[in-house]
View 1 (cartoon, rainbow, N blue to C red):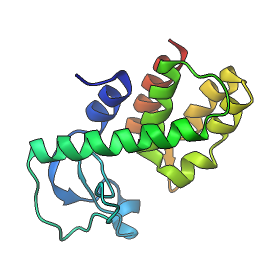
View 2 (view 1 turned 120 degrees about the vertical axis):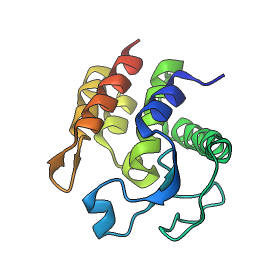
View 3 (view 1 turned 90 degrees about the vertical axis):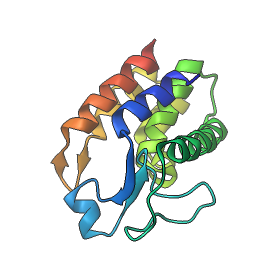
View 4 (view 1 turned 180 degrees about the horizontal axis):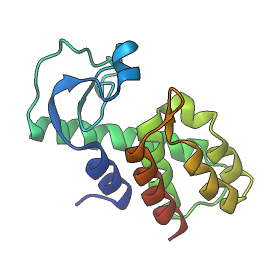
Length: 150
């Protein structure tokens, strides 16, 4: 059984068995993804465009482990009482933008100041890549907002 945050990530990332570049920016910067949007394997090694294909079952196993790692990371960064749904939404957000970007995000800053409305609103600031608004990110952030507020 998957959690609400995992559902968002799985549905928005979608399975790809071969390494790929999700956007032109990622291609330009040689940032390959695999499986369900993973840029790194659970062991920490970066995904390379030349890596072997993986099965959907293997991708789901990797995803489950990586999402759990992300949830633990997010939980350690939270300084205030947080609902389960807030944690799930923040974990989906972190899984998408990465640990370093999450740590310095205004979303986390507002959340830790208990300014939950500003944290909710700030999620929609993270819909751009290389200055271009991406429809898929807008859709994902709105789903994360709904979960964060529920």
